[in-house]
Length: 103
Image (tube, rainbow, N blue to C red; front, side, top):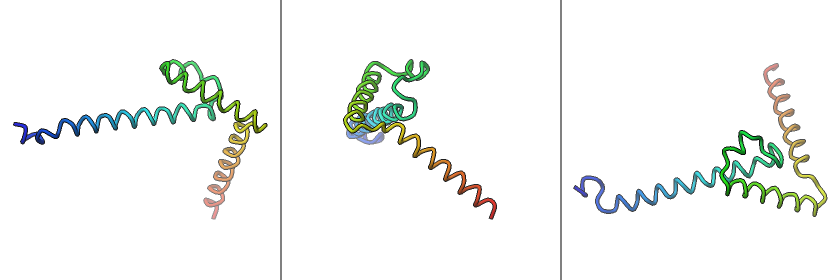
């Protein structure tokens, strides 16, 4: 029976695969939470905050606090720079696309 289903080593490989899948989903979720600071600011809306568990809320608060300390040390608001760069980039892309359709 074991030989038909992948032998005795199928079970450990399945555990490793599932562990890697879980780690990957945790990493992806942490990246999303990390990017929230740049997109929505220091206070997430209620619909987002209700979907975060305790450790994710703490991660977001700690990340925001660390970013605030860093920005105060260099005396530069990086969130404003990020917004202006993304607006400039989106304006450039929309202009480029509209010009390419005219030709």
